[in-house]
Structure formats: C-alpha cells, structure tokens
Image (cartoon, rainbow, N blue to C red; front, top):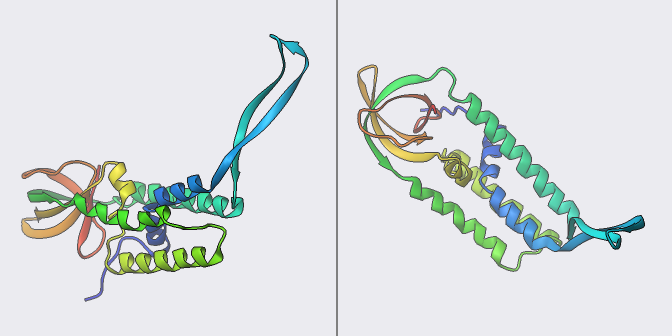
Length: 203
C-alpha cells in the first residue's frame, strides 16, 4: 500500500532541520571568541566621560558558517510555523476512546546533540561534511519512517505524542496523534491525518 503524507519533501526536510536548531545554536555559541566593542568619542566631556564603549556584536571564528546555520535555522522555523498553521485545514471530528502519552520519544533527539560537546570544529570541512552526512541519513530515516513530527521544537511549543484509539463516523481506529493539548477519554476533537500512521489534533 502506498504511503500517504500530508507534507511534501521540502517542508518535511525543513521540519526535520527545525528539530536541530538548538544544536546549531550550541555550535554557534561554541564558535564565539569574544565581544566586538565599539567606542564612541564625545565631542566634549559628558558627565565626566570623554567616550563610552559598548558591545555591538560577537567575534566568531567561522562567521560565514555561523551565518549559514542562522539562515538555515530561521528558514526551517518559518517553514515549521507555516506547516502548523495550514496543515489542519479541513479536519475530521473524532472521539478519543483511549490515549497514552509517548512524548518521551523526543528524548531520542538528544543523541545527536552530543556532537556539540565533542571536538567538533566548524573550520574543518571534514567535520562539516561529516555533520551533513550524519544529518542527511537521519533526515532520510525520519522521512521514510514518517517520524519528522517527533521534534523537540514541537515539544517546546506544547505538542505531545499520543497512542490513540478513537472513533470516526462510528468506526474504531488507531493512530499516533500529535496534539497541542492533553488528550483524555471521551474528548471530541478535530484532527487531520498526516500519513498512514500519524495524525495531528487541531489546536
């Protein structure tokens, strides 16, 4: 049977990348070498000061790579926001008959975060290529296994994963649900099917 998916390839990749924006932030912080200071010279002494010095930014070892990570992160987060806003159009009404939380699976995302605490150097193309290959394999597996919505950013936004049994038009069904609110027995909610195995509850 052909798998159905509510998200196309590009949005799926963007959603996957959004889950690793905290990892990129850690890498950016580790690349900071200091603060960039600016000194403003007064034309005449003001309050006893002839000049004032204040920070205007950060000094980076690999500024081009850092800006690349920032741009990729912002685009992926904007894409995630767009998908969440539009994916629940034309929802179906269902009644929850059983719900069990499985949000602990988001912890699996912490494994790649360990990369940022080992000797990873943004200035080495070998390290960058290794990271791209590693994330590329994870992205492929996530899309093929239809688990891109198991995402720490979604968890931070209040979305949880639930193994659900429910009735739709009098028929009993089961599905993994992504929900912005807690689910309980006899809750009547609206949902949209993301693929053959997962749905999302409309907030």
